[in-house]
Image (cartoon, rainbow, N blue to C red):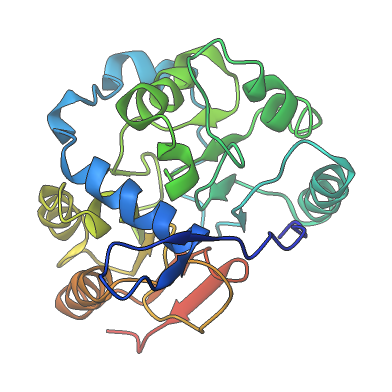
Length: 268
């Protein structure tokens, strides 16, 4: 949602014998995927329910309406992010918000080094300080993996250091929703590296056969619009599409490649 200045089109030399070059951004994504492929996802330690639940701001489980704001590529702590936060707050003040849905690239552009990284304050706590008694349900994006397991784990652990930030694991179901609404978040960066496939089975178990609305959320979309920068891999697209069809998921929320998106499917 926040405007980002276009990046330079610098190139780096590729590995083919013809001396061809590839864009620096493309080279970065290749390197990141290789590194993520070497990451044992079991190294990520989730937040236990008994530690998470007392920190939450649950709403009435019998409510007949749920209102939330969704955003991703949240910003670099500047004025544009503040303006978006103010607009979000205006909507929530007018309509009431049950929670905020974060769609990845939570701490832009380099993620965090540790749970005590000042970026948490500068790029999250400060911009959203006016949001009181509301949970921000986050999911990891590719920029959140810049420091690999260390950075991803720091974002998970920060859940116990904030009154708003909620990221109990790389993938999870949002708790305390009404029985007619079910939402599950997946880490599309791990899927792109063809690791963490177990999250697809967990999402299927949480969503398939559930009554009412079934929502999925993640960072990468199911389809690429050909925007500048990263495009969704065929494996991610295929995995998400299979999950969406299998569980008759009505909406998939994603962010990358041009801002928040909703992929609407036929209700089933």
